[in-house]
Length: 107
Image (cartoon, rainbow, N blue to C red; front, side, top):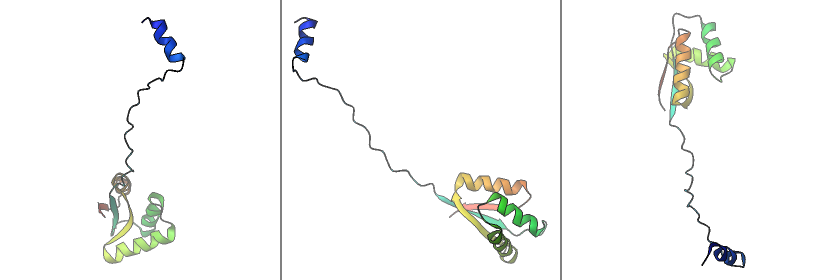
């Protein structure tokens, strides 16, 4: 059988086999484990500076920042937020660069 005859039989109604590859099922996205961002009491910096830093570096508004600052002052520590590890580490570094103590821990 020549190539022309092969080609002709496909055109004249013959079925064409198409190779398909199995598509792997997509797994649902995995949530990153949460981490707490904790502000520690600070007897060195001015309270307005602490509140300003919280507002600048977190999604908290001024009123919530004042509450967190007071809590840290009275109890020694306050939860600023819970987020994924990379963001928590970034926020920790940003507070540290401003001379404030923030730690992170698994939630």
